[in-house]
Length: 189
Image (cartoon, rainbow, N blue to C red; front, side, top):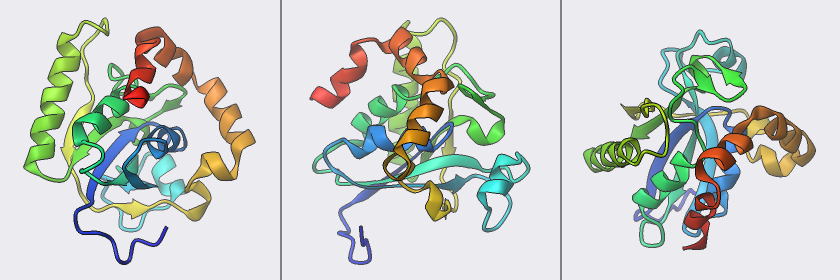
């Protein structure tokens, strides 16, 4: 999609949820999503590559940057979808992917997003859904670096490899255990 003439009313949400391959498709299917890009954020290295980030030495998280129409979908709803994709109790990575680049985080782009994200985290913590505290970080957005083209829309371009990787990750089992049928409610609204 060409975003050169992007409508200035579009907004951006940035989430880290472990391997970015598994984070794109759950947002792609929501109404109001314009684009989901895989990339890197939060590190100290300029122009990091996948190899740099995977090495756990650049300080970056694997993230997705979501361009969305706030007239169609709210940031609150994006947060609801985000929480359903991750293990918010794990600060050492996500599922089979371990290390700092695979930690979960919400990167806010303004104070309103920060406030909404903090409230959402508080509500999830108080919900009793999880046996341990929600430790997902809420951090200010920094420079976003696009991941290599190979990683963009990976679930569409390499569906067999994507499904195999996801099936052994433990993500879907975790989602089923902690969300069950509630998982789908975000997609039915």
